[in-house]
Amino acid sequence: MNEFMRQALEEARIGIEKDDGGPFGAVIVLNGEVVSKAHNEVLKRNDPTAHAEVLAIREASSILGRYDLSDCEIYSTSEPCPMCFSAIFWARIRRLVYGTTREDVAEIGFDDSLIYDVIRGDAELEQLEMVSLDREGCRGVLEEWRRKPGRRVY
Image (tube, rainbow, N blue to C red; front, side, top):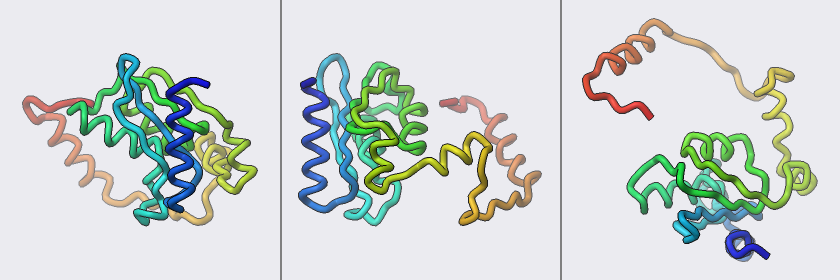
């Protein structure tokens, strides 16, 4: 077994034992060395964003002092959910290695298929009302940022 996936699995098992959240673990690696590892802590933190991948990215960014993790890899025990995939994308991680598929995790109750359908435009979320409000005022803030000298685009 791959050593990094083994550590991700160990993180998942720690989370299961502690009842911190779902059975998921993640490890971020830089130049063959583990930078961070985490397990799902949604229940522990009462935070729906406390997925293993997101927590591992937060820790790696803090340790490395940067948000750009393009020289890192992430090992996850499962194919990331849409939120975690987006976090991996925005962290610019270039390589994602995962174990189980989204279909596998759907079988145990973690079904993200509706989210994928909404992203593709094939479905709508009945549980979420989306309202656009004061677009011009909000665009003004975007324009202020765009005009700011020395702004940092990430």
